[in-house]
Length: 209
Image 1: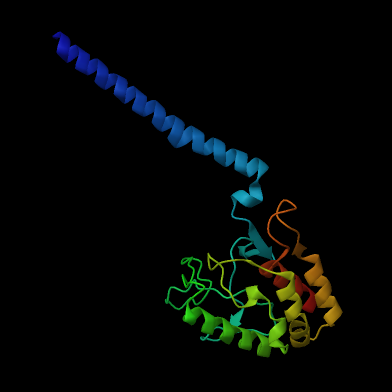
Image 2 (image 1 turned 30 degrees about the vertical axis):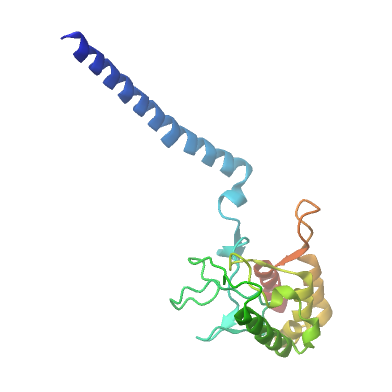
C-alpha cells in the first residue's frame, strides 16, 4: 500500500474513532449523567414541576391553565381565574393552549389593545362584583408567554369573596388559603409576590369537600 493511501486510511480510522468516542460521551454518558443528577438532586424540577391532586398529575406549577365552563370558555365562578391568555391556536383548546405559547404582540399604542383592556376590566369587575377601579393590571393584561401560572396577590384577593360564595365557604377561610399560597419575591428581590393559581385551586377543592 503506497504512502498516500496509508495516510488516508490512517486519517479515516482516526476520524471514525473520534466519532465513536464523541457519540458515546455526548450521546450516552453526558445525557445519562445529567439525567441522574437531575433525578437525584432536582427531581421535581427535572420532571416538569408536576402538580398532583388525588394521586394523579393535574398540571405543572410552571404552566397556567383554564378554569372555565362550556365551549365558549366562560370563567367558572367556583375557581380562582388566571390572567388573560393569548395562547390560543384556534384548535378548540381555547386560551392557555400548552402547545401554543404566544403573546398578543399588540403594542402599548395599539387602540385594539386599549379597547381589549377596557373590555376585560368591565368583565372582571362585573364577574367579581367590584368597582373597575379595584381591578389590578394582571387581571386585564396577558403575559408574554400566554401561559403564566401566577397572578398577583391583589388579583387573588379581588376574587376571594366571589369564590367563597360560589363554594359556600367562609370568606375568611378562602382568604387564608390565598395568604398561605402567596410566594415572595424571586430570590428575595426580583419581581413581586405571586400566587400560583393551580395550587391555590387544588387547596380550595380540598377545603370545599
